[in-house]
Length: 128
Image (cartoon, rainbow, N blue to C red; front, side, top):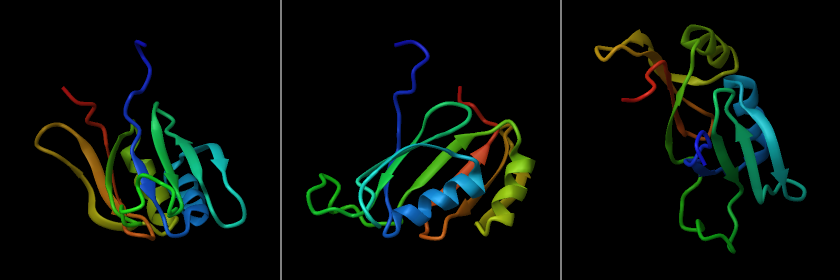
């Protein structure tokens, strides 16, 4: 499976439908799949333009993640345009916790929180 993404963070949100709207608007995720009825989201996949993405859903008693609190997590995503993404995130109401900066290890990026408190870090660092 060369080239396929094998890591997909899974998050739970108290208001998963609002989280999807925010993540698409603020960070540029692409809505790939959303399953559920009414306000409940049983499973959603949001693609990241550079590859991979996140899965998320509403709290459910029948989930193996039932003990995982909502709005908890920290995710790092690679971006080629941290400056543009920073402006987009701020305009959409993301709470910046570490402003746009250049790091000692060569990355340029920032960290913010979404409305439910999940930390989202974006930078140019692609790993070793």
